[in-house]
Length: 503
Ligand code: ATP
Image (cartoon, rainbow, N blue to C red; front, side, top):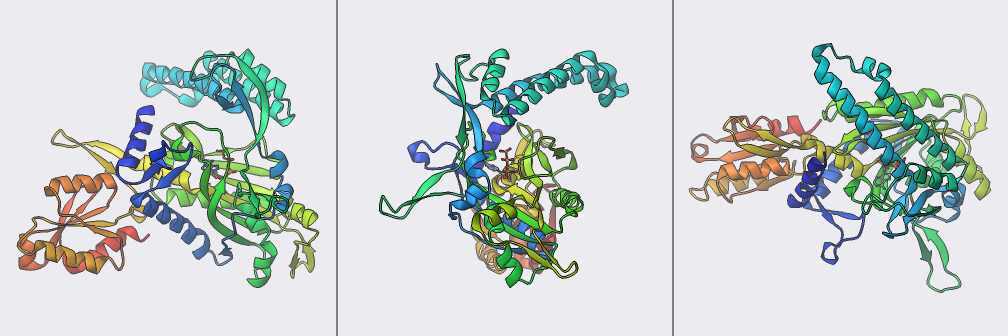
């Protein structure tokens, strides 16, 4: 697993997908830049989401709200008072950690022991092995499970009651050590607000403390009535948005899974009070279908229903994805009740109500939201696509099997040799196709090496121009995933590519 993650990191850099931010100054922790291919993949994911959410839904419209908002927004939303992580420092190493993550990592180690028991038993019993039955009856596994449950429920309770002393006590009782140095010399646990603050205005006394938004959702809530009125929207309806969000996360080495500056793709769906459960279920299903439509394997997704709910929610679930470091949250679906709109009514003194012509009355709508991190989705797609294949001739190839619809470059056009008029024909194909697709031209090295280069960069098609082309206007089109090659007419290229990349 660790190995696969390392490969993902180095491949992302080597093939121009993701660079460390300000790398020449040794980077900035948990901040990254998207490179020439990364920016295309990211844009394609964003478009794929936007198309499914906005273009395909008559009752969903988009907005693009600002990153800076009036600071009272964050009082109303609860972020000023409650958007905290419990932090603990190690006195010897001076390293800072999230106290809850230390405890969760400890539990993950116990979980790994369960996996080991399961694997052992599976080997012993062969075909007769029933995993569910084993997990629910084996004494050792049950013991591990009980230990995990006890620890996690105590952690949840202490955090809920703001009993930070007990969080520290738990870390000490479990004898959790600094993962880097092994030291067990901990400070007190302290709450730390995740919002980045900055100053608005130039002069010291008139400057106003503002925040970089920690989520895009609030930009939608404060615009709810403007959009509803000007768009003549009828409930149920949704407002969608993609954009940057900022959180001063305490993290180490999670690449673009957890960043300090990241992008969210969110949709807030406004519904009649009392119907939220129904819509919550509907959006859970719709969003999972969206993920599955990319063909990255149904086994790689699972729902995680939350038992412990945030202060604003009456139901919440994550869609988890199997990242190289295990199943982790990729998207959240939350039934947020009328918490946000009511809070904004209270803090702004303005009504944020909808007149329902069918009911003939005003009410504050309930909200069901779908919220996915674009960068996290990027990591899901990228890490899942990166594969190493043994070929029949005994060699291996590295191939980035990105879903064609998301691939940065759809086709590479390759003249077999740099003479006899082949480059000119290849250039002409590029000029024809570039109106509809991102395509590239490559004439360096032997054609086999060029194929491998395009495989590793994730290009779904290679189109080779050779001497037969001069005779009959046909070219070879090679599929990245199957490596199958076919002879086709130049005029057919556009249709063939279109079939795979426009879904
Ligand atoms: P986590 O539990 O992983 O911190 P969260 O529950 O705080 O996430 P939400 O506030 O629900 O996340 O945000 C919605 C989505 O935004 C998440 O599902 C995730 O995909 C993405 N996201 C949140 N924080 C980050 C981050 N620091 N870096 C990248 N993506 C993020």
